[in-house]
Length: 193
Image (cartoon, rainbow, N blue to C red):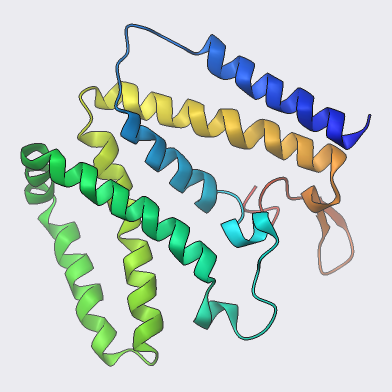
């Protein structure tokens, strides 16, 4: 089958899954799409890899990608705005989980003695995205339904796309250092898949 046709069929299948999953009795926030996008990016490839804009030179671990930083920064900023609007419930969860706050505060302070403080600060900012996305889920009006929707939405996107990439695109398969073929799907490594 032609990869373009397979992609179209996969997109229609994903759309069909979302259509069949609709439930009028469950009312979750539209902000739930922020953790879905976050997990989609973290659970697959970086945005710069998807767009073919990965940095060509330099140490990617130290410098990072401005495209990735911008996209994750926008998602984090949007999550923080939503959490500020949810005020009292956000404060209640943060106060109930103060050891996590102390840990992130310690990580922030540890930037001062890091070998590469600017890199450590960037990684700290990216790391606070995880608890921010978790807070979006637990502060939702229906947190259990929000968690269920998060799993189904990410599964509806990542699993069919992985099968599509493995079967029809070269980027969905790779080779181990020994030369054995491996399936990677939408990720960059078989273990991530």
